[in-house]
Length: 112
Length: 113
Image (cartoon, rainbow over all chains, first blue to last red; front, side, top):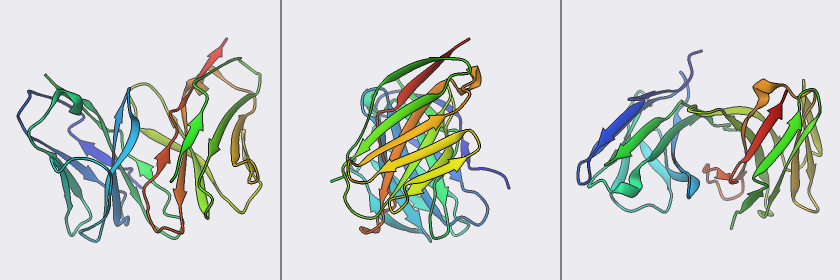
């Protein structure tokens, strides 16, 4: 099975712009979670989607949003980018009783 | 609330065993995971254990869980230079139904030839 894929892998934006990141889960996985990784804050949970519905949300401002499509692919959007949004954004998909999360390679976002 | 702590750095010689430690605070039914992250890469799942287990072994990896002390360890036997990476401990509280993982800060393992 192919793993979790994320596009783009690298992105450079300027303050005030918005950005959309994409995640394709492992085939058959219906749950997709997003995490932000920064040197200062480490790995932090953003949100989780299942069957096109947001099930959980982390402690991030409303500028961070996401959605999931009927094929389980997910996108996250960050509006009005700030310098502090520079990070590695990781997507994970899971399924089954244990719901072990498998991560993609991440999208590295740099905000200038 | 959930909190996961790890030591920041471990250095071992090639061929030795590595032991990476983690403590967690959640008292509910919990899944505990170990992930590996190499430079510029995402997180690779190594293994996981449920909080009603004491030990799990998978090839060179042994996970030990001390429920009383809420202490989790990952032992890597015969450590190789390719094992150099950051290792993250993470927990997921089953009882709350939340699927979010709470991660430790990561332990950087350096393997010296």
